[in-house]
Image 1: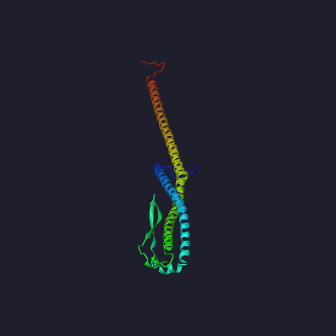
Image 2 (image 1 turned 120 degrees about the vertical axis):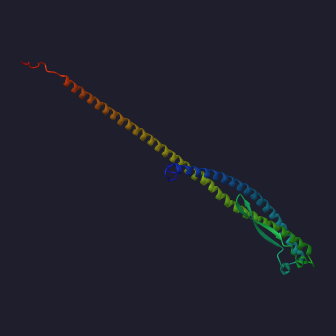
Image 3 (image 1 turned 180 degrees about the horizontal axis):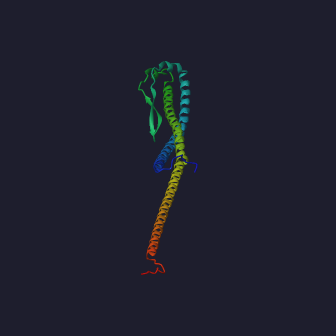
Length: 250
């Protein structure tokens, strides 16, 4: 198995690899849940973006038509509006929303409450109602624009987060886990082989000890037999007599 980590096959390393495999399995499950949560929120935002763009198209048409009516009734009033505006009545506030550990920027429209009296009196001579209608229509358009900007920013952020999470999930599923499993199998195989070698060595040692003991016993038996035969020979020599004794002369 070439697709494994280069490790020394020991029991300690086996325990470490098993711990890493357990962590990889838990991490894969958590990242999978995170990817599912991000995908669900991604689809919800996509639906909102489609709906907001449709509303935006309708509102912009109404705003353009209201501007045309105001110009027809009051003439060119751009310079009057520019001169009347002192402070912004609408501001955008940026916040962050947390979705499964991913921070998503969120924009909100805030009204400062600073109503300009000069702007309210714009078109007092002619076309005042049309100018106020045009102002309300474009205020609604600004609100939709801020909402659309928030949704599209969250859409792009979630898209990148989903891609990153899916890459991590695929890496754990297709690279890390197989490597760890192959490494564990390799270590187990090597440990089993070492155990068999040790068992074979012990058997050889025991057989050698038995053979040495048998040879030693055989040598002792042979030595005892030789000693016994020598003792018997000596006894026979002592008891042995000549066939004829010499005559004794008186």
